[in-house]
Image (cartoon, rainbow, N blue to C red):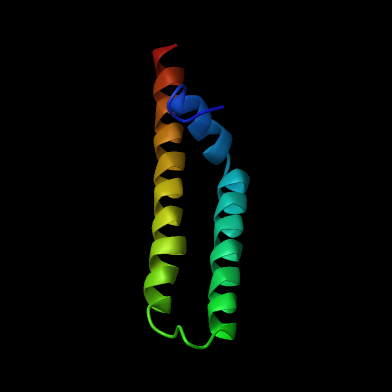
Length: 82
């Protein structure tokens, strides 16, 4: 499923439940932390790790949580309209 053809369906596949949300955030965090570990092994790169953590883990987590909350609101509105 592609984001541009069905954004609501794509969002539901990513953030349908809190378990999906947690899983995607965990996968993102593991990938970023692995990259930081690789940077640590190559000690020539020592600056910017905090920025990478913020931009790579915290901000996407906020976006996923916001998507989860918006989908929850959409479902509640659909149930009230029925």
